[in-house]
Image (cartoon, rainbow, N blue to C red):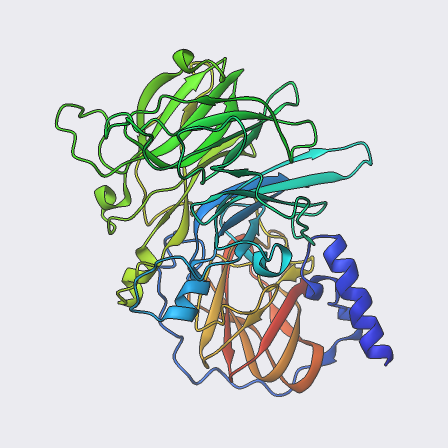
Length: 501
């Protein structure tokens, strides 16, 4: 009973800190010695993405339509849970999205090593949803001193819902019990599919919401007439004032809003219609428009394409959805491709979230046109401190792992591995100790800079009922290195790790 109570307290503490339970649990002072550690006999599992590439950010989980918010130095990315459709329909079934009723959450503090935090189950939080896609998240500190998060999302193509929380990992609640926006919303006309929301808070603290889809009566391929913007109420879960049209040429979907240097930046995906007379707007690319007066349709200026369809950057053609975000002084484009699906050799149209830098001229509010890459972000913004407890769920790459293990690493194959980028051992000294929080039976080896690199530490364990902290001598390198954690045995839960001088 004491063990159960302790674990509940640890999980509550970890949730409050927005960290996996394991991160609060590693206690080197209580570590037990490693069993005799034999070298891993199985060859490392083949990766679905190169260790030299940053994209996609996860090689285990299909996800799409990203959005992001910063909180206490971490960037939290939310995305449509394509993996739910993949599990329900199978690898070669077309991704028709109707089974998706959840969002996935990832976070990072260096743009290279990512933690998967699990899902937001919209089916249980808001049972009225038909399907949940394309989130857009904003946050603000409110009168109670807490940061409040507002996650707007598509209820299939029917409208926009909203969830709220006071922690980026939840728990999330449904404050309305129904859609915030639908085709029947007062003041909304000629917009048959008011979905794909984009939200932003301007410098005056006012919230704004964009959305839209379909073709208005009398609309054309060149001007469908269904992109919309509206001011949010002070509670951010209501609408205030008129709903205005954004005259977005060849508009299709994927509305998003940014606010840069006093200017509203509206981004959207253009449609698939042929347009020989308008070469500035290639099919299914991401385009942008700007204004300082968003409720005046005539004030919007079309600025052109800023992100190519993935099919024009060497990936499969797919729908297109992006989020532009400034984090730690750099602008990033977060988007999706079908690169993981292609690496797996399956037919279903399942998507994966990727990230690249995107140069932004804030003075002129100009976005540099780019395309997606497999390379992505490979240089961490900061180094990892190996002498502090690190969550094993944080990784830049891996293979042979379970997708259904938020906050941990769980291997499904012997020879599974993870890579952590940018670990700084500078002036560590030659000898030290390695600690790992694990559950299961097997061996964990720490290799330097590659899967075949020098083994600097190894622990063996046999604890299938509970987590245990094990320790073993370590040969500490100097400088900054990538670490590869290689697991022998199956179904090993790897929770946290740490070195000591």
